[in-house]
Length: 410
Ligand SMILES: [Zn+2]
Image 1 (cartoon, rainbow, N blue to C red):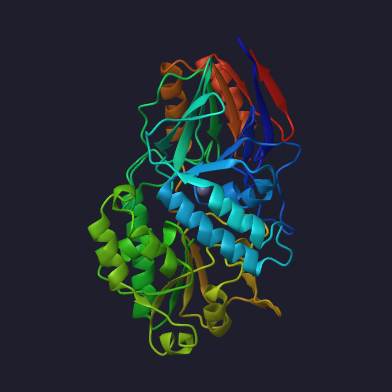
Image 2 (cartoon, rainbow, N blue to C red):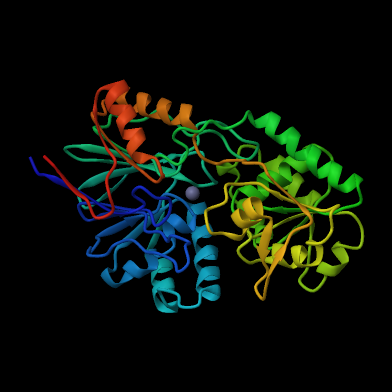
């Protein structure tokens, strides 16, 4: 029997720059959006790259691998989303780690594969399984003599936008699982939606503006669906507009495409140069960047930061060191040319696209029922605690690797 080598190159004991190598297959190759950005460790020559989903912390530097001319596999929505995210980040980064040629090579080498359509690469049979995280997101199942399930980012509960992850896992020996929210429970979704909508309504009733930062992929569309459901007509500005159009082309990857289309139609797109007009009367604006590091959100905030009637209503987790985190914890924001104190309100509603503590434990238990005997915990600040829990409560091998760690399995 041959042996298998698992090499962890990034996303260990941290969130960002996800990259795992199994023999000569690379699973994700992302960026860590820190200042300056961080990349996975190098030292690999991949035969193939498999991208779990279209977020930059999973795909952000995959074009860097094109020197080796690998085949690149992902779902059709992930391909489209990766394209616009990579192009955008190439344009806005001060020194992008790849050039136009690598970007185009990445596109040329991409092979689109739907969920549950097994394919062969380098002796492995590979399947992409719905992960319920964003449209097109996948867990990756690899099998030959041994089998490995890489969860990617995963959510086991449905949202307005997406069905929950498919948990009919095939027989698997090894699980590599995300750990983002180990130790944290999410609030009940409907309750969270209600409190969010109440805050938007209150802001508008007071004559203020509700600036709603939302990630362009997934979160923007879900927020539009919630606002539509409650009869609020928002403006929408930034890359979320383009992403909404893309997602409209993939009905089979969306829970209810009609509802999504109605919600997108309900929202008023803001043209560049017409932003001042949006602020002429009370308004709700769904806009990027989700963590306020750039984007049209900063334009609106630059006009409103002194206005006590207005609010920044964050819709997701804010990474340390981002503008969103500074707004939330210090009541200040960096507008580019200067840092100002916020007199407008700042609130946070975490519409998380990740499994919470209970769901992560459920995922591990399901995988163990399918034969898993070894678990690696990645993609989180508390991977070691999660691995300890698995060892103590489930009684199987569990490890929280560090970046650079190599495991040989035979
Ligand atoms: Zn993600």
